[in-house]
Every structure is written in C-alpha cells, then in structure tokens.
Length: 323
Image 1 (tube, rainbow, N blue to C red):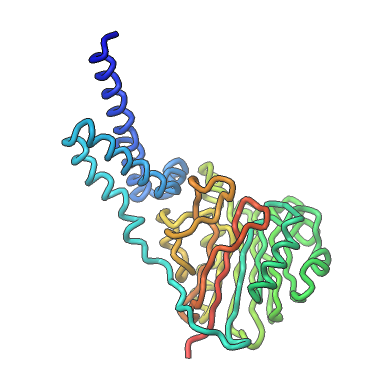
Image 2 (image 1 turned 90 degrees about the vertical axis):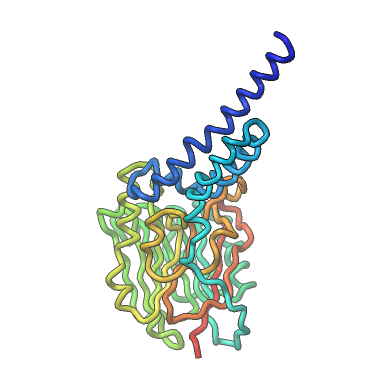
C-alpha cells in the first residue's frame, strides 16, 4: 500500500468517525426532546453533556479534513445543546449568613446498600450541621431502631422497608431528622415499580414545611421509565397545595430530560456544574440526585459532598425563609 493511499484511508476513517456522533447521537438527542417517554431516547438524552463534548471534538477533527462539513455540523451541535444552554430550572445559593437555628440543612444520599457508608454519612452530616438526612438504598434487613446508634442526634426516624411495608417492596428509604415530625406517611403504590416514598410535615420552627423523599426506578426499559415517572408525579397535587416543600432523593432523572421540566419547584444548585453518579467514572457523570424546593424558601447554599463509599455522591442544600 502506497503512503498516499494510506493517508487517504486514514482521512476517510477520521471523517467517518467524526460524522458518527454528529449524524447519529445528536439527532437522537434532539429527538428525545420532542418525543419524551421513550426509554432508549431517555437514556441518550441523559448523556447530553458527554454527547456535546464528543460532538465538539468531532467537529474540530472534521474541520481538519473538510471545513465545509465542519461548518454544517455547527447548527446540529447548537440545536443539540439548547437544553443544556437554556436550562433555568434551578437556583444558585445566595451564600447569605445563617444565624444559629435560622437555616434548615438537608442532605440526600444513595448509599447503595453499603452499611459501612452510614457512619461516614453521619460524620459528614455532623460536620455540615445537617438537620435532615434522606437515605436511599440503605440495604435490606435494617429496622428504624438500627439507625439510632449510628445517627444518635437524629431522633425522628421515618423508615420504609420490608418489616413495615409489604415484603415485595423495592429498596428501603429512610428520613432522619433533628426537627420533630408533626405528620408522617409511608406510601407504596403498584404503579411506581414497588418503590415507596416518604412524606413528613416538620414541626416548629419549620412548621408548614413538607418533606417528600423518594428513590425512583432507573428508566432502562419502557416499564421502568413509566414507573419512574409515576413516582415523580405521585405528589404533584399535594405539593401544589403546600406553601413550602422540599422534594429530595435519587430521582434517576437528568436535567436534560423533558420530564425534569415538569418537576415541582426549582432545583437546588446548577446541575450543569456538578455530577452525582457514578463516583467511579467521572467522565460518564450524571446529575440524577436532586433537591427540589418551592419559592417560599431561599436557597443559601448547595454543594456536592465527599463520597461516603457509595457509587453516588451525597448532596446538600441549606435553606432559610425569606425575611
């Protein structure tokens, strides 16, 4: 094979590889915006930041081979990037100072059934002065009493698992709080893929604040996508009637999904600047853990916390009521 032929084949292969993300991934990502509710498209949309990064690299590579094709790729990349560029369903923290007892600090963490992660989570919560912790996937076999020695400063415990729910329920979910509960409810519906969620009304000084903690199904199939959306929509009417609410947990939903735009309230923190899963593959990172809140609360601070050994990073939001 002559050097000139080898160079032509190399250029042809480089051009073909550059066109793949631009002509396949980008159109499917756009299609996922206009045709919501289709599981394969939902998965593609979830990786929108990675698709954009690969597409920009591909366009630069294509410009070296064929500038005209590279220029044609620019509007494709632009339309694909619109959900990322125009995202507004979030609030940035005001960074206002909190007087003692003035702010409510909440943490949500999926600990992936790793019991050794719970003492680390407690240490993290103590360091941050957390008032409430929502735990997803704590592992089977735990009762509410098992949490007491691990989280001694959180006397209010709301726990849904096999011992107090039907034994065909999905992953356990728990809320621990320093603030007493005035009302609690454990809800398990068949249309949510056997995933329970927790509802708690806080007592003074945070009376009239409702907490909803949930862990949605992963939308890998059409059935699990439907179940995920069912649990995300389960409390819409109740939350709409609340003056103040916080919805938190592993929602298995990225901000680029059309379903995210239908969630109640605003997200704490800009999800474009942080990922929550997986801890072991940063380049594939997704923002699927969220803390949503309504307009009656001022977000003071949001941050992604250090790993406690799970495949998810815990996240924290600090709120106060406006003057």
